[in-house]
Image 1 (tube, rainbow, N blue to C red):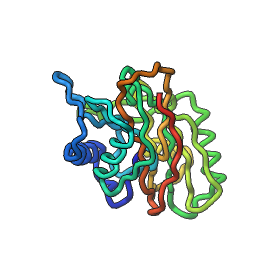
Image 2 (tube, rainbow, N blue to C red; image 1 turned 90 degrees about the vertical axis):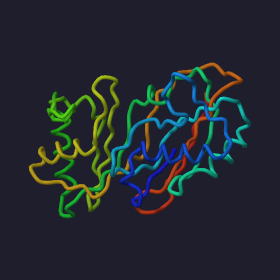
Image 3 (cartoon, rainbow, N blue to C red; image 1 turned 30 degrees about the vertical axis):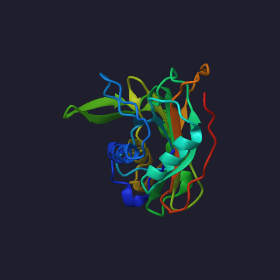
Length: 244
């Protein structure tokens, strides 16, 4: 897992990956770069929108040799950008599906404004929104606006009893429809409420994986499990993840 504090929230996922890959190259780790495969040795599970912070993320690190976990852990920890913290490293069977293929959902924390929004009113609007069979929104693809249905990409919306309003938003990942964007969900919620909802911060708290059972192999890549700091600067909560 990895996290991104406010100071670097404008970096894209690709920027973070490229920076970290360069750092890893200097550690002496045997980074795998198969011929004919454009995939880099370090790949994050899912893109993170610019401006969105993260607390718990996954990444695949593919090596051409099987090394002791302690050796890889030391090298990865020493090479990480300053805004990332390594929580765990697990051995994954080389035939296991890539992370991008098994991400099924994401959990976001959205801090909303203005402060005078009533939680019960926002909660009622969320109920009306989720009761709709279809929520039409627009995205830009290829330079042109495209209408799509947001409803299948929303898992849940919960509203905490506090001010400013804090929303817990669950989004789904779909192989054809894409993934639900929390800012689009808040925009649709604002329309259902009939009042503007501004966003102070969006934090992706975790990704949800659907991992099938896989056999154990003696030659497996290592998967870093990283965490960082949330918008308040506090250390993000860590968790556990078991390798294949």
